[in-house]
Length: 154
Ligand SMILES: [Zn+2]
Image 1 (cartoon, rainbow, N blue to C red):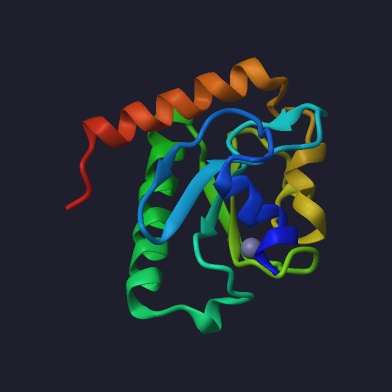
Image 2 (image 1 turned 90 degrees about the horizontal axis):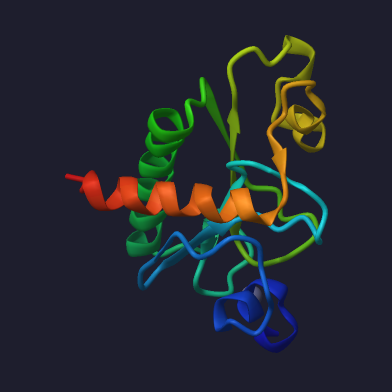
């Protein structure tokens, strides 16, 4: 199963992805979403479980703790560093049976009809969406990594 799983392959480094890894420990892997060479919505970050399990239900306590802490840290980083006014979190699992959580910032002045996260990330369509090619994604990843270094979680 792991050999044909996109997320497992990404963790092994055998698939090129946008930006650069933001964080990794024994339980989770954190990186910017990759939009198949199309512009990326800046700050749409994925928290993947390292282990190949399908849903939140299969997590062991250590994994749940690591995922929960990372949700909190990332949300704070997106607010403090990228000036998000709100952060959505979503587990879908419709396409890949390997647990991953979408963390999607909503930036100030997003008209209410584009608020998400339902309907495939409506914020993407907002007139003020920060859609950028890879270079800016790398910069964003670096900013968040630096923020994590400067703001230990305790
Ligand atoms: Zn997998």
